[in-house]
Length: 148
Length: 399
Image (cartoon, one colour):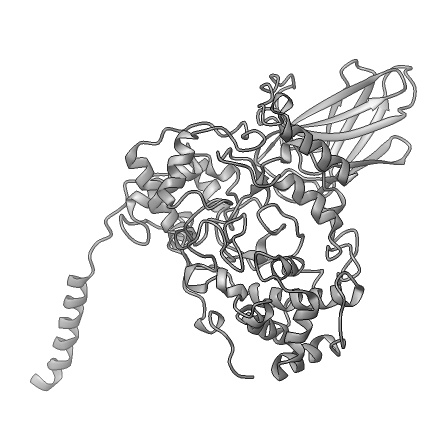
């Protein structure tokens, strides 16, 4: 896997026409709701309204530069069925980058999930996303969070 | 009567003299908003370093003594001329004045200063080691640095009665011989690194003029125009936490977020930055999850478990601490900026295109005025702390 990644990179660097040096397009303007208050838990509906997602960091707060676990609860609103996939992630829309970690979302029991390995390494506006799929396409709930 | 009043008169004279010598505080004209004060409060004081859980010897004084001996011992290098201290010079903030490290050969990177390494999360400019002890074996073996093999290290330890006895008292009997990439060799390298970490954990910067100023400011005491910070440095601090947005990356009491960023330095890329660092640290047999770690638990090694490699990591290098920065020119991973003013000029205008990858979106030219540049430089110079105990900055000569 590592060899493959390094080889891909070498190819990128060797051919200027497909060079990785090209700056990516500016990130799209965030389409997220107004920032949350500092209180947890926070609840949002997914984009198509099929699920209600509630999140809160374990321990009740997110500290800049420290790993944390995000507790996630997903409840179907309509008859769309039980989620088959729930994935939590986060990015900084105005910075054009995400976390330096790859969080792992695991199913605990019933409607409860948890995402381990979250880390917000910079202060500013983050957007936590929880992508839910019940087999008919994915829909996300977005949670804007300000980290000091 | 004269005898009785003489002591009182003398006392009064002293009081008058003292009052005459005490000048009223000339108050600073620099003011800070509540937001700026909150941000300043996050920059100080520097707490004790976190424990190094994967190194059971990190706080062991005997290991620190052995580490200090090895740090200054050039016999560890293959040609007997290069010690850790050859590049990490104590009198130069444990860095050196060359753009690129000059050891057996010329390396591709500037020598990192060692101040406050115990506060770091990743090591080397690209973070290819996850602990201070794991990083030590790389420069020892790199052909352009110390060029030694594990067997050369073993022989150097075995050939000196003090080193041998101190090593064996800590880690057990030295093997008779070690072959590269074997468990015995890696154990030896790990022990070498663990003793070096015990020494370098003591290289902590404290009590800078900024810390003293901030302590007074944050406790609501009136602050003066010149002591402990000049008004120029105070204006620089205001810029640092305000319009300059320097704390986006130079965050927290160590003035570093411990992470990696592409600031878009121009030039010819010599490596892939953090991209390669992530791949390397995962494969490192000396990482925290490996057989030579003293704590392989998932909780301790959470940073390794969830490490992600992304194309964004191309050309990213670690945010260095700014404490003692004035002591450690030149600057940046490639040593390409000779002075603090050059660094400020770079961030002011962001000239050129990145050597690799793309520059972080948050970095925008700030077009500082000459006065602002002078203020920022004055502030950065206020981050130099008290000198270390001199005993830590020289070779140990006796047992």
